[in-house]
Amino acid sequence: MLKSHCRGNQGRRTQRGDRAGEGFVSVDQSNLNGGGDGRDIFDITIIGAGPTGLFAAFYASLRGARTQVIDALEEVGGALTAIYPEKYIYDVIGFPKILAKDFVAACDEQARQGTAEIHLNEAVLELARGDDGVIRLGTTRGTRWSRTVIVCAGVGAFEPKRVDVPGIAELEGRGVHYFAKRVEDFRDRDVVIVGGGDSAVDWAVTLEPIARSVRLIHRSKFRAHEATVRQLHESTVQLHYPGCETTAVHAGDDGRLQRLTFKNAAGDETTVPADELIVAIGFVADLGPLKSWGFELQRNQIVVDKITMATNVPGVFAAGDVAWYPAKFKLIATGAAEAVTAVNHAVTHYDPKARLDAGHSTAIMEKREKEMFEPANAGSPV
Ligand SMILES: Cc1cc2nc3c(=O)[nH]c(=O)nc-3n(C[C@H](O)[C@H](O)[C@H](O)COP(=O)(O)OP(=O)(O)OC[C@H]3O[C@@H](n4cnc5c(N)ncnc54)[C@H](O)[C@@H]3O)c2cc1C
Image (cartoon, rainbow, N blue to C red):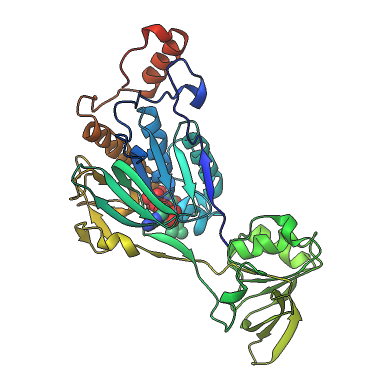
């Protein structure tokens, strides 16, 4: 059973003079919100909490937009978290060299400075624009409403790759994990980990001191960070590789995983105790539902107007890897610039009187700090 995650400064409808959101003050929404029909309508909804979506969330907060972010994954960071957390990035502004996971942590912190709600573990399945221009998003958790949407969906929603063994699906949540979270859940347990990348190797060395036993089963050689692989070889983790794969899982009387069978390269099978199985064999990405939302597509990307980042669906913008225009570069840096363009145009879409260019963050924040201490003189939001 997947848990619901809602992080950020959710539900904070700050008033001028309020210190919430570290100086990010929401515009007065009383004349915009809901229309009394029970719909909780956000100004901007961002689909995807990769680097582009997180920066868009920060920037939307800076512009005073009531914002929500939705991502299918349990963690923020998109491709950086799912595919290459331990790789160094060299071409993002301000960091000569930074691990992807550390960069994500900084993006997350920046996004959380604002007032955006961040909903994880929630996939957007439907997008439909009503006659009143309000956009309805059907998600795996229900319905959300928004005046504008910025799609920052990268190559699509990431899903963990699953092991294809009879009966394993029934044991998900009963010993079989695709997203391991809490180290303490594995204390004094017999743990089997399947995979050979960063995530699998990290979990093996992390759990070794606290689990009763840890085994790592892998088909090939390890592709994780060199130092962690060295640590793995020096540990007591029992390694079964290369050419080893799971062939059967066995439940106990309590309906939980109890044992696991794997075969080696020669085809010989071994059955071992397994209270917990962590499958960490990567992710698959799928644009999936986005393809049926009426966008003009170019292969697996949404065609946008390069000037505004608008898609062909009114009120819906796209930024980052998912957006396509001639001479597009799929980079973190370009995604951030596109996010700014998309947010500014989204703001003028739902509020035509707002300025397109809000100016520099230095000036915006100075003005807001001043307003906080002089609430009576508060002017129009940017
Ligand atoms: C191995 C590797 C190394 C790289 N190295 C670099 C580098 O050094 N420098 C660089 O600039 N770039 C690098 N890149 C590219 C960089 O990772 C991408 O440009 C960047 O991740 C794009 O960010 P994004 O936010 O647009 O999309 P993503 O990071 O792909 O995030 C998209 C998010 O949207 C979510 N999502 C999608 N559809 C839905 C839906 N329907 N509902 C809910 N959520 C959804 C996904 O779960 C995901 O979290 C690298 C890429 C790879 C694969």
